[in-house]
Length: 210
Image 1 (cartoon, rainbow, N blue to C red):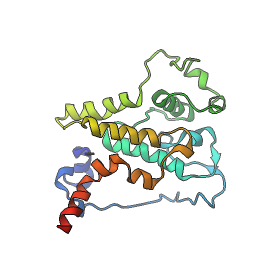
Image 2 (spheres, one colour):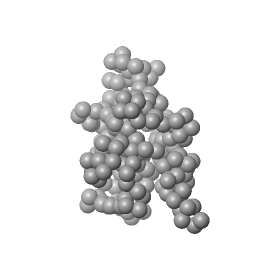
Image 3 (tube, rainbow, N blue to C red):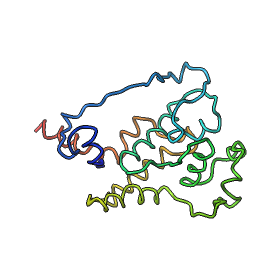
Image 4 (cartoon, rainbow, N blue to C red):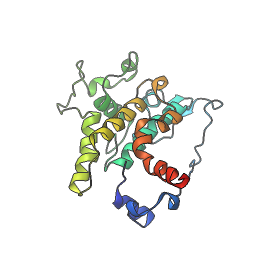
């Protein structure tokens, strides 16, 4: 899973393909929003709309959860891989992002549709867009935001097997029902991560033991 060399050049000072794993450092910050799901009381979500999970949008005052954070992770993974965010809106709002969720992923679970008060302003009973524009599926967004930009910049596109694993991982994380989303450990153990995203570190570890 490659990254955009332009982005890495601007952020790290060098193209991504010239930076080794041992020279890469990860910095974690909670931006004063660190939470403890097992202990915290219901409260408004301060996650940016573009990264916010559907249950957080439909129930603004709720307890924070790891499942909501995993949803945000999928959005960030897509943004790293592509040239555009997974869900887009010029002026993000609850309705605009829920529209994007349904547009990309399909029907909300039973009972959720009724909680989205303004749904009939965006979709009809057959889940077609009211404005008449075609829906953009997850696969279509992957093609438009990842594959096409790579071709335009003479970068190798994601091959078929990696793309399948990538979409499988995204679909599992982007399950509408929180309980059906994988844990962080399960994400790390997915074939997408083990065979492609972490393959360089795995190869290096094997070589160091040789």
